[in-house]
Length: 155
Image (cartoon, rainbow, N blue to C red; front, side, top):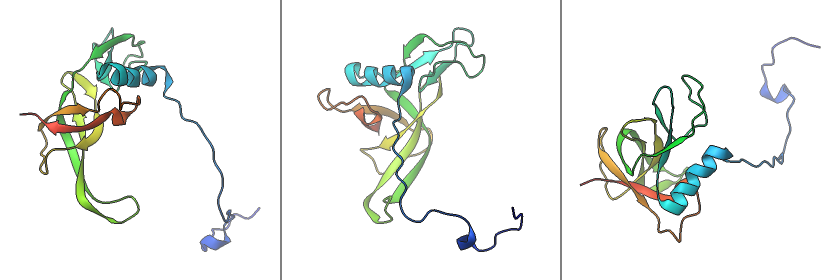
C-alpha cells in the first residue's frame, strides 16, 4: 500500500461512466401526517413539546432540546414572516431565467424552524415582510410541499 499523495486526479481510482443508484426516500410518520394535513385540510402543522412548549415547523417526532416525544399537533396558520431570502436568476441547468424567482425562509409566529418556499405576486421582498401561503386547489394537491403554490405578501 502506498501512502504517497496523489497529485494528478486521473491517477486516483475512479469509475468512468454512470453508476445506477436506486433508492426510495420515505417521509416517515411525522412527514406523512404533515403532508396529509396539507393535502386534505389545507393546514400547515407543527408539533409542540410537552416539556419545553416549543412548536416545531416542520414537525418533528422528538424535541431536539429535551428529547421528549412530540405528540401534540398544532395548526400554525398560513401566515408567516420572511426571515431571509434569495433571488434566483439562473436555472439549475445554467440558463438565464426569463423572470427571477424569489425563495425565502418563512418563519411562523410562535414556532421554531421554518419553511423554504417561493414568493409570488411581488417582485420586491424584504426581511420581516409578512406573507401568507397560497394553496393549490384541493383537487390539485398531492401531499407534497408543492401543495403550497407560493407565499404572497399580506395586505
